[in-house]
Amino acid sequence: MDRKLQQAQGNWVVGERFWGRENDIGILTRMIDDGAHISIVAQRRMGKTSLMKELARRLSDRYVCLYLDLQKESAPPDAVAELALVLNPHKPLWEKGKKLFSNLWQGVSGGVEEVSYGEIGIKLRAGLDSGNWMDKGDELFRILSKSEKPVLLMIDELPLMVNRMLREGDAGMTPENIRQVDRFMSWLRKNSTEHQGKVRIMLSGSIGLEPVLHQAGLSAVINNYQPYDLKPWDFKTATGCLNALARHEKIFFEDNAVQLMVEKLGCCIPHHVQFFFACVFKHCMLRNDMHFKAIEVDELYDSEMLGLRGHAELAHYEERLSMYFEKDCLPLVKAMLTETSISGMLTMPVILSLRGTYASPDSCSDEALAEMLRILQHDGYIKKKNEGYIYESSLLRDWWKKTHEDFYTRRK
Ligand SMILES: Nc1ncnc2c1ncn2[C@@H]1O[C@H](COP(=O)(O)OP(=O)(O)OP(=O)(O)O)[C@@H](O)[C@H]1O
Ligand SMILES: [Mg+2]
Image 1 (spheres, rainbow, N blue to C red):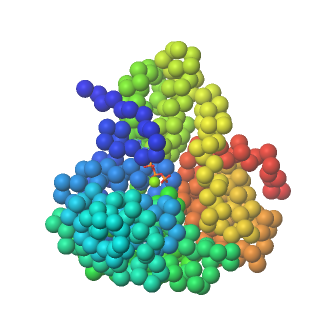
Image 2: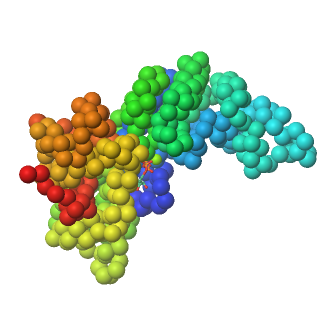
Image 3: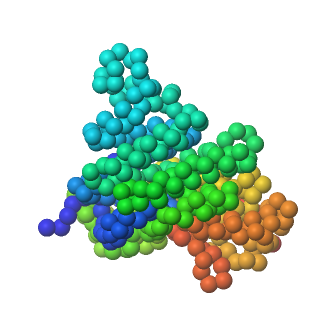
């Protein structure tokens, strides 16, 4: 029977809400079995977290799968505390971890055995500092390496933590900040090689790790990870997903509505596919008619995907540019994106002319410009085509145009 799929809720999806990705799972499983350390590279909302959670679910009989989210962490001691805390569901490892940190809760009533999970979190964070995180972290890795089953340590949002560390304080990317990141990443690297075969590390995050490290001249600290490029869904998978969602919600797509929806997106980022479906579902529910026709696609796309709701989903594409680019370069980056959205293609002569208007060769050298284009490609904004660059996603192109066109002065 054709599969039905429940709509996504919250951030990531797993199990019966998870669609497709069989090839990715197959390839990644082989890489993991080979003992590789992996860095998942993909732009936002591609389903990186979902893929890691689903992998953990499917591999949990053969691996101890640990999922570590560094979204909120800003320093190595916090990351080590988190690493200790994620051992909690794995009792033998958790007990060893508790012993390792026993000095931190001496004096707590009842001793180590009685300390609750919540108390441990607080004490760990208070007891780990810049002087001891590295030794304690090494000890934790040693514990992991002695686990009965091999360990798959999935570290999500590491680039956010690294980016925060690099820009800590008011002075931007200082040599001291860079040194701290180097220390942390080199520590992780050292443990990944020391316990190769026992512990596999998989990295991911909603911003690219490589561009962040590259800016600090630290690209080499991740050359022990094999990059895995997580691609958008192909049209067949996206179409299958929309049909499976429709079966579950009792929506009837008429004519070639599904085909048109997928073509509108251009690039089938799973979240955008789910979001488009959610718009169709709401539209049909409100008018109490569950038949959705092809001639309705354009209007719904304009009013919802490019409307207020879409804006809330897509605004991060603009917000995050300020994470990567210094203030001096931002107007140029945005002008390049607006120009591409209007004219469809960004060629080198146009780029140079925009630099003349929106920056100066001092604030944006040829190298800085090349780096800018590299980051915009790495993060899925634009891709190379023939003599220039075009948008990767039609949805992003249409939204960017709608948001910026009115405030933009075209080149002469
Ligand atoms: N395999 C999948 N099956 C169904 N829906 C998916 C799948 N992967 C991603 N999605 C959709 O995309 C959304 C985002 O997924 P997820 O949080 O895993 O992406 P991400 O790449 O980790 O995002 P971010 O860049 O924000 O960290 C989900 O809520 C879901 O709607
Ligand atoms: Mg994620």
